[in-house]
Length: 232
Image 1 (spheres, rainbow, N blue to C red):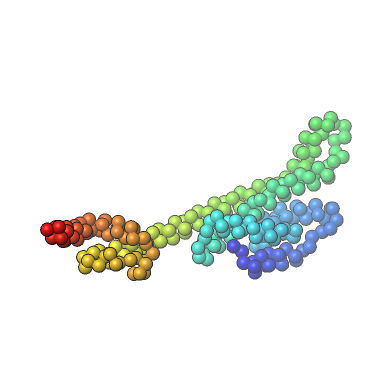
Image 2: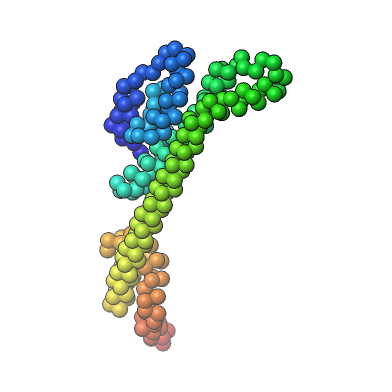
């Protein structure tokens, strides 16, 4: 998850500009966000909820369970990319809301329904560059998300393969020790945890028999002989 230092840095960067206070200035600022809110290093903008951002990032870490710096950095990047993507619908809504206010008095002679569509078209034409930029930034962010997701999957799959290989090697070693204990007739006292292994006794026995299918044949014959003598 993001460290307190990272969140503080984002908040500090956001505070370099407290933003305009007039309605006109706020409208202009919302268009500036089409550029500054979707690119660059700063993730949090003035007015963003730092607690909501932290919870958003924590959700990614809880779901993806990264281990190590490389995986953690990719998960952080995925969370930040998603945070920016979630901003796009609000920006698009803001552009159209701003345009409707700007052109509210246009086409007074037209019928109500036609006038509504004409205003929407004028907003699109007036802010086409900003709307196109939103589309471009959305495509870029989606490509970044796909790239980071693929890189994270590759890292985690590689790590899990190594973990499985390492676990199998340890289980084989435990099984070989258990096989030796059987041949020395001390296997009833042999316990995995007492020999440094985190396996159940059943796991070790199954693997030992896989490695040496006749493992208990000699022991069973010896015990059968003892039972016959006892019965006689």
